Image (cartoon, rainbow, N blue to C red; front, side, top):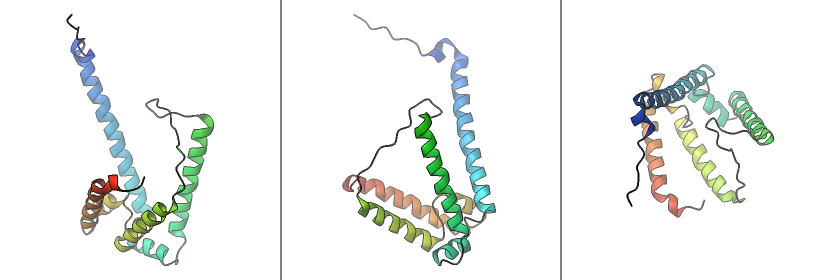
Length: 162
């Protein structure tokens, strides 16, 4: 018995394929726009400033601790609201939070490596592209280091405890 293959919707209605591509491009544009806004805010608030980061690690200024503390409060409030109102993602998927085993060694080692890289380069991974865009070409090396580190993590991920 031959199976019947249904033509995709875009074959029956050629404009539907164009609409799907337009929505995808629009979604990517939204991501690009939010990244540009993030970069602009990061530059204007000086959270990408090497001097501000050094001040933080030397306990000379509250600026970065205030920014990080505000981010933690916003994240905690967001998680609380998501759980309380059982919110879903924009695509309708249920948002769930899984409890992880309290294996503190991985957090200590990972946080130490992250902090060491942050202190040595003066850049958190988030605004690396904003730093390059702000005209600081030395951060191209930091970006390449981040990509290389991510690649090596992918190679050894299966051997690490998760």
